[in-house]
Length: 289
Image (cartoon, rainbow, N blue to C red; front, top):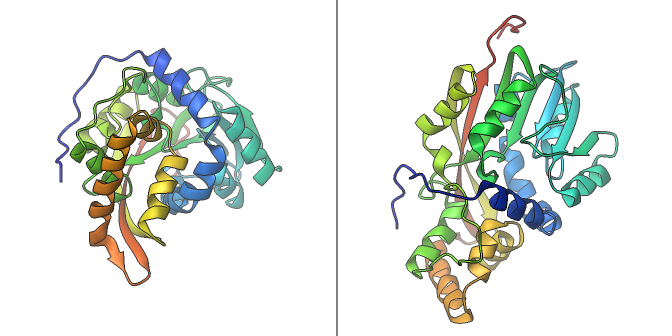
């Protein structure tokens, strides 16, 4: 298995990467919903607890996707707005939860005044943006003083095997990134707790905390996991499908070997690990914890 040390910085075209992500999610909403919905929702309650989401508060859910986190906010009695850059994601969220306010918006330029929200959350947002520091600052801008922001991201591939088996399969197949794909920030940069904490600190937040949420998730077979990852991702899907068929076959064969340790009589039990970071905006209005 490859080891994944602290992510190195790389020069990217953030605008090209953001456009690639936005266009990609407009074609992957249903695939994401079918595969990742049951997985990403398993950290929703911890995310909302970290942001101190409760009854009567106004909450912004950024990169809301199919609206899972926004729906959980509504269950808690919060007044929630969900935003996503992909029109297809917004349309799906509106179909699933028509009573919630979902809007298409760019997280780099949120259409809200300073200090508009009692809590801001972003479940698996930060690995999909070309300028994470800018995004963190923008989320902090719309947060009221004394209130909390919470973000989540995948842990390192050796712990988040949900993605790690495919990451390692690509490495074993000696895949080179396609020149046609825009380079983006390292996917696992914020799996490093220091990096994640610094991101929120540089956005002006205090009381920063980073925690790990770990669990296992069951899949019926390796095929279900393989097809779900290709059907419900953008960057990973593009990397694999850009390869010649013989290289794709090598990746698939390596993937099959890598999932074997997780086989049970009922399918696969795959480890999942998530990093969750939260911080408080300085100023008056802090709620008691």
